[in-house]
Length: 213
Ligand SMILES: Cc1cc2nc3c(=O)[nH]c(=O)nc-3n(C[C@H](O)[C@H](O)[C@H](O)COP(=O)(O)O)c2cc1C
Image (cartoon, rainbow, N blue to C red; front, side, top):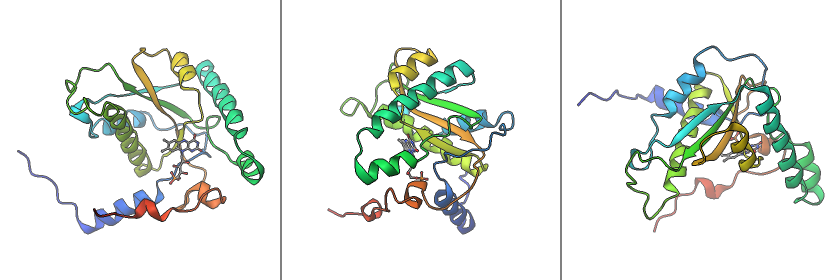
């Protein structure tokens, strides 16, 4: 057994700042990230909890310009389809939103859940199989925070056709796309979500409410 470090008040208040300033980023500087940083983030993400210690998250860095272009085209198709589902003022506002930084961000990372992994021997997911995908989300969340702690912004793009992205990246069939992430230095910082700033959505008090039963 080893001795756990003591996380003091200063650390806790800095953690709070990290959480308050994390942000989903869609406007990136094109500057490359220092060598080794993405690998460091992936290493930290692998420390996350996972059902049965299954560790199912697989990250793929997408560097190939042709593959990136195909992902961008998928985004454009999915975004057009999404726009068609809105009417009136929502449609007008949706048109003005920037919902991905795929063009400028120096790093694209696709995050998959390996549904065929035998690691963890199925523990904890017999009655809730989706716990495996939740475990991959945990890894993404840690990567997001680790990146922010190094001043790197992350933008999660879900306006994509998962089957297209999976095919384009040529990954094993058992890998399910969980998230497509853009990473890079943000053009600006804010402690409020972009969608709140532009009036798309307000803070929902239910999200910070603790019910007791
Ligand atoms: C699962 C998931 C998918 C998301 N997909 C998109 C997306 O496709 N485009 C986008 O602009 N933001 C996307 N976001 C970011 C959210 O819009 C953002 O987290 C939310 O507006 C709150 O802003 P914040 O992350 O800056 O606090 C996604 C976030 C999550 C967790």
